[in-house]
Amino acid sequence: MDCIFCKIAAGEIPSKKAYEDEQVLAFYDIDPQAPVHILIIPKRHIASASEITSENSGIVAHIYEVVAKLAKDLKLEKGYRVVTNTGEDGGQTVGHMHFHLLAGRSLAWPPG
Ligand code: 5GP
Ligand code: ZN
Image 1 (cartoon, rainbow, N blue to C red):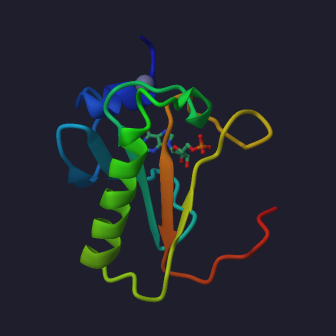
Image 2 (cartoon, protein in one colour; image 1 turned 135 degrees about the horizontal axis):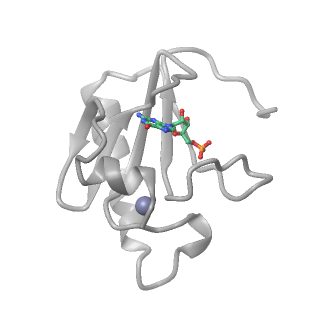
């Protein structure tokens, strides 16, 4: 499958890793939108959040455990935002589900 994030998960495309285990990889976004901008992905391909079912939803819980660990390790005491852009109107540009962890500045709400 021609998926850029599958290639990053497999180590075929290099990335700056923030966390890794058997199920997930967290790596720094190539085009950061905040002082801290990390992407957390399942290593197994899931196209988008719309593909989450009772069969695979455990990975979402695990990703949020990784978010909490990263927030602690990176000392994000002032807060952070987790975003999963989904589909065209959601602004998803890579078809492998990912969670943006954004921090290090005050983030506007609502998003544009
Ligand atoms: P989306 O727009 O789908 O929510 O987010 C995709 C994100 O992936 C973007 O923030 C983009 O900068 C990032 N990205 C795309 N290609 C690469 C890459 O090859 N390496 C890294 N580290 N990030 C990437
Ligand atoms: Zn993929």
